[in-house]
Image (cartoon, rainbow, N blue to C red; front, side, top):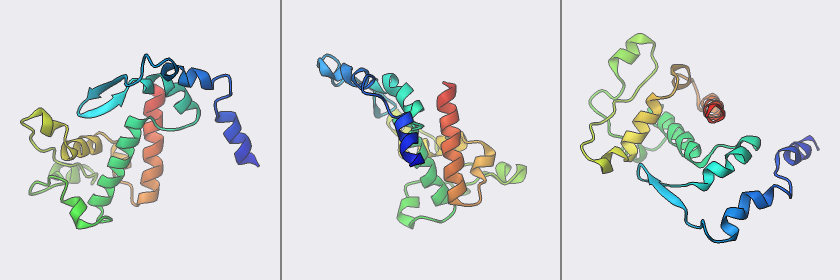
Length: 161
């Protein structure tokens, strides 16, 4: 029963629901999107952010980052099929030597991108997103603690904005 009361506490009330949906009711803001780094982002995410925070959910952009980093963790630890790891652009030594010497937290070499299309590609995004994580998070021993720490890290970043 505690789960039900927790859900009710975090869920928007009937009075708040129209505020969440009023931007689409009159039709004036339908399709109000922008293209940012090759991914369509909806400006309505900004108006819904307080509800995401209250429900302890990640914003859509953060969910993409969450799953991208999980996939990268699985690739680096051999937990996924080889055909998926082929999507990553590995150089001769994918984990930088300096990172191994400093403390063993793996970083990924970011491939050179000479076009804006390639800069928004999967391998560039994966490398930049992974390298932006704290070293303690990247050196997690297994997938379950990594997922938990990554979720907390992204929520903390969301609340700081």
